[in-house]
Length: 329
Image 1 (cartoon, one colour):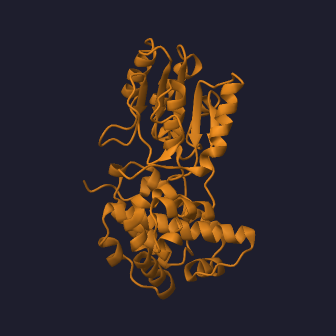
Image 2 (cartoon, one colour):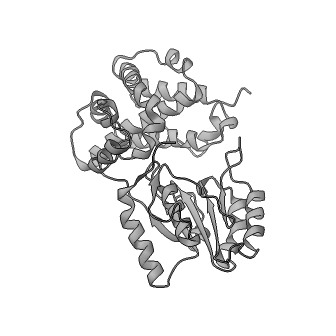
Image 3 (tube, helix red, strand yellow):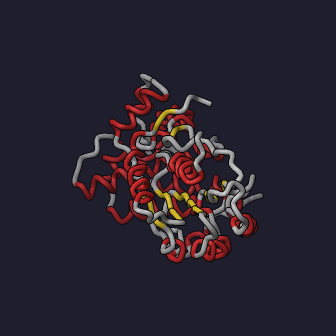
């Protein structure tokens, strides 16, 4: 593992937490939310260290984060090969939290990603969120809040971590993984700097995706050959790249700014904002569904055909998912 370095944009949130401790108003349930790649897990590891007085992690939030080994800490993630956190995992956690602390300080449970909880798991967690035993701290980590039930949100203290600005991200990366690679420094992931290292292969493919998507949109190139060559991970990356252009176009239309890249400029000039939102929703709808429930390859082909048409004939009804290509497996 690389040497750990401090995450400077988390200082504000450290101070907020320490003020809560000093005021003796420490919440027993905390939802840590914010976009991917900004240090939510590192912050949760630090909170656990603070609560349980674990020397290895209580000083500062660091990257890469570590899950400290402690008898009174449980870090819950989906089991191998599973997408969701199961109700059995939550029931087992509740049983553990009902026991006395091994070291007499308290207990900590970290559940992530919490937006991968199904409704039964969420319901099972409600009682322990309301009445945790002893000095228990429950930390929920989620990229997005919109799928989290209101009954959970109302029982949590919410800490929303904002993305660092580009200059702060570049300063961090100069320490963590110095590079002169312009594709990294100009990546759309630059404000999610903790993702950069894991996404290097994707960043290196950006030029290829950019040229291909440009050719499909601007020149009417045939999209299906491109789709057939991609593996599942690359399909996700193409989704990300299309979303980036659509989001950038929508944002510029509301801020009344000018796009300099060819794709966003074309999208701005040739279609209405409603179609952009429909395409954006269509991609997110596909990505929100379990992998095995439909054929990702055929879904990408449909999206690329929409893309080739310039998103000129977009529709999205409540029954759209029912029409997604079914899995061939």
